[in-house]
Image (cartoon, rainbow, N blue to C red; front, side):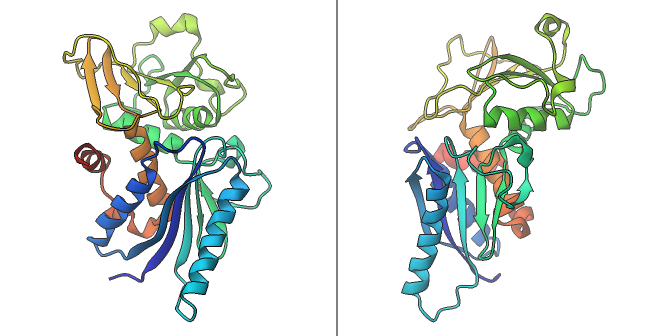
Length: 297
């Protein structure tokens, strides 16, 4: 058995009452423990904060309390793991000196943080998670014809939207920005991959539709007859999810509609792979495996 890692974990933001992240933390840890990794949670909570500083302070307070409670014990493996959501994602200063495990700090969006006992590290797994979901449902980013490359049809221009647009572009996809509460800057890393509205009809590649302005804790309402959508059908991915029972995939005449848990789980797995436990990357569950657990929970 590997050396024990003791963790204080939380999801931080507002609203977070609907969040499944603590469940995912514990589930992935249990699976890794069965595969020889020793990870113990001393805390795994939802902390309702509107300030990133307050969320970081929560972690340090937990560490101090454990050190006091376990005086004399070897706490060299004590860590803080945070999953960051709105409105905290844009609050990490560019000049903070924080080490980044994955994601581009220039996009000013963080959604995962880890204190390894010495320093804070950060990550943005929004874009990497989106690519995992897209590839799971057959999107091919190796196509070289511009008209055939996967097209991300997106609403919104906030932190999550920017991270996903950057990752989609880096993978080789194209972007059609439709509208949103905030604009998607035409000077970002996606600037050469943008498709004009008048050219969208000529684009024959597969499409993934996503509304980044969708409210947190709300699932998409799907209308239409439930029929098979076909292998090349458009995909409509929700960024939100609601409590209770859910259908992970709905097929109708318009395409495939994916519950927001797909994106959540994919992002979470990327956080474990690149930030929380890179040494356990090969033993992580697959996206489908973790979704099946959520379905049966």
